[in-house]
Image 1 (cartoon, rainbow, N blue to C red):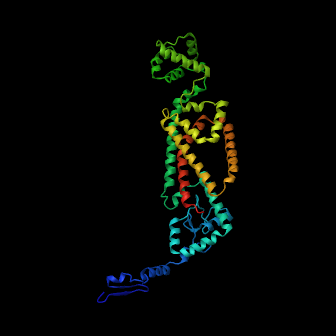
Image 2 (image 1 turned 30 degrees about the vertical axis):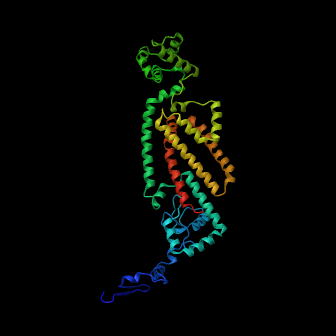
Image 3 (image 1 turned 30 degrees about the horizontal axis):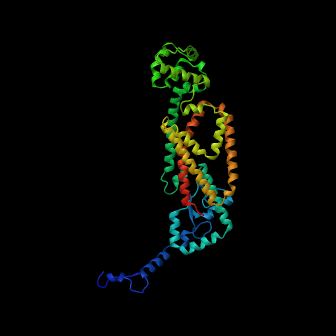
Amino acid sequence: MKGNDNFEGPELQFEGKTDCFQKPPGSPNKQTDSSHKLYNNLISELEFSCHCCYDILINPTTLNCGHSFCRHCLALWWDSSKKTECPECREKWEGFPKVNILLRNAVEKLFPKVVSQRKAEIQLDHKISQSLEAFQKYGDEQLARGVNSFVGQRRQGGAGGGGGFFSGVLTALTCVAVILLVYHWSNREEQDLLVHKPIEKWTAEEVLFWLEQLGPWASLYKETFLEHKVNGSRLLMMMEDNDLFIENPTHKKAVLRELDHVKKLGAKPPQNLWEYKLRDPGWNQWAQFLVKYTFLPYQLIAAFAWNWLTVHYWTSRFIIVNAMLLSLLEAFAFWRLWSRGELRTLHQRMFSHFWKVTSQGLLVVIVWPITPQFVCNCLFYWALYFNPIINIDLVVKEIRSLDTQVP
């Protein structure tokens, strides 16, 4: 440009002087006003219109296929059709659709007056409110059941393939756990049965295993017991004759006291968490358990696991963490009921849950005795070690739903 360099646009005029950008006192900001006019000319409401109501997008919700709709339009579509598919291309969406926060903020900043007017109209529509409430309730149920697909998470913005990675890690851990369990049970199957097996039927090897569990000092007498092939019946006879091939009076007294305990119980007393699992609780234990389970269920579980921290370091911590996660999920459930004013339905939900758990319990009681021990053990260890991982995922989803939930 030469001389008096000027550039004149449709709304803006720039001169080759530095003071032209300073706003004179009392004059309007022509640059800001003209910028808004230019944006309004370039972007219209039609670019951000919903393909259901053909009005501007309100709380835009993006589906897996990429189409975005007003959340209330999607709720009305789902409420009338009961189909989890896109209203435009009919592709099924997976998981539970979330509000596209970036798109929502852009629409609200570009067209604030139109958005405010539309929101006011929507809030006055009772049918829309009912559909939104039913739609959100459906999403909460999907979340509570853990039905949200990992593929759906991967396709949604910001997921980055996390669902596929999570499922892959879970599958790999399952394979490793099965291998370790098979190895563990192949070596401990007979020993674990001692809590059910009467002492007079113990073999010489089982007697040695029982002796080892008394403490490191008992290993001094392993060779003597093995040399004389002491089985359960002979052990009882030696107890009556007070002749156990043990010269140390303190050790002999400890073995006799433990033998007397075993004789009274009829089997080896449980000494760790796994052997307590094999024991059948009595009626007194059932009564105490039911009372505590009714009022402090997860605290009861955590307190029990806390007492075993010195014996089962990692297992007890898995149980304690899982109890904390379950308590959080219950807190989220109560929060949803309170925020929606549905606390009056609490007794109905409790009865429904009680009936569901009772039905499952009766089914387990019927099926468990005829189920192979290997399958039962797999189910037990799966619930023990993998439920905390699943519950962590559920808690994260609950926290994310608080950010995207639309009242």
